[in-house]
Image (cartoon, rainbow, N blue to C red; front, side, top):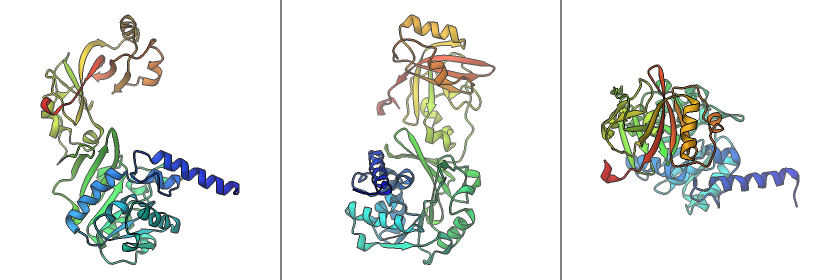
Length: 356
């Protein structure tokens, strides 16, 4: 038996463990609170970053600042020494426990309770995971992180090689100099990491599909445009390549042009696929008129499997209610092209290595 507060803590920990399945390799044995679980780096992403960090510094001691429940610490600890730091003593204790639960020798690493503003440490390479929540609200701007820009830029000046974890929606123009790597795991765009010092590459932008071990770097490029009115295929860029501004670098893989300036979707005549895109065959195309499209699906005896929109005001959730019947295999996309809204019925194509 316990108090209501104690029961609440236990229930929160159990729920956090449940939600960590598929995200954290050892989540079923870790101790965590809801806040720590929500901010924790996915194991696959943490290992990706740790590999890059250790490539430059081997087994040398690195610092994991704002360690939270220790997902980045655990990845770094597999191949060298870590000083893990948080201003919250509970988070430091959680990380200590979770290192042991991850089969790391916790005694080989060094806990520290300290504020980022007064970090009593030499200029070792450092990974920083600032708080990106204010109460229940997520924050996306660099200026709203805790610790804030002044402290972070002081760390960069003092430590040189810094990996700063940001939300994927961060505005690259507001970040300090260095390389910004957007990372996607499966279908989820999960973070952007600013790399400085010896960790930074020669370009400003990098997109990584971490589960596919694919990466591309470069500078922003404007997209070549398409003049096609009725394309045979449409290509939707995956989140990471679009957010990083690097679609232009992989555009030749699908031999297609942007269907409308700023739309992002590419239009082409060839069945070319790429891991950086979802490719769809155009089954039917209409000028958007709700009744006409609803009637088309009714005649086919099904509803759309999904509804996508780009550059239009229509709400997919509300549109879905207009259709009757079970979902079929087709996707409905409403896309801006000039002054028109095109309604395209799409069939997704499967990417294989031979289709490149």
